[in-house]
Length: 363
Ligand SMILES: [Zn+2]
Image: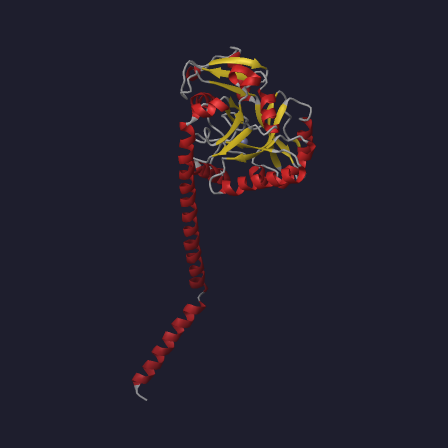
């Protein structure tokens, strides 16, 4: 045996060892798993973000089409929204001024601010209307008028939506009331009108307390279940046979494509429920807006005007709650689900989930 053969053996052994060690090394395997997982997650996230963006674009174009037709739409319908937030919600910073001006500029005739567990925005508007409070500079050109204890009218000498009339919008009182379900979860109910139930009562108790009152009761984001402080569509519909809920909501604060999943499920359940029971549960579309840019022409409910019955305006300014109820009960409405600000909603939700947004404490 020469020295060289010994050397070859040693080299071979060393090579095999290296290979074997590499196979046995748990870190290299873990590294691979982590690497591939990150690659997979990255790709999925990339596709997800792109689709959110692209979906938003499609809706933005539809939104533009609608906004071009505001004067025609207003001939036949009251442009309305039944669920939105202001600076009086802990998870929202939008100034009341911006909402009031935005409504007048965007052709809305009925707008309901439904802050979490308070109606301070309405009280503030009512104060402006009864001049017990000073109207801020930003709202100086707007005239506020109290219609009744739960409705304020805002108007100005401008025709921003170009329908040939000066803009005016009615703000009935409303609130997004927190309740507790059987398991102690926080679930929400939108109540509009003269009576607002106390927060943090049981679901059944809260809904039943609205029965003999002059109010409209809407279940917000029902399909989102606990995640969206809703009951889940099935459970929500169980309450309806009592006739105490006026409508279920399709909600445009969910970013696309989540909105398709959640809102699609509401539409299917309501349709199946109505078919099965012969009832007439309505659907409304609402912005549930918390962030700038998501308020107007996102979730819109169009209520039919009736000039014969109500005269010049086509709806009764002193009984807006009764009017909304009538439209819901008799199918005199149409709802539009636009989601032109998916991108903003997406980041708002992400920030909320990871708790970056200091003002966000609930959904
Ligand atoms: Zn809300």
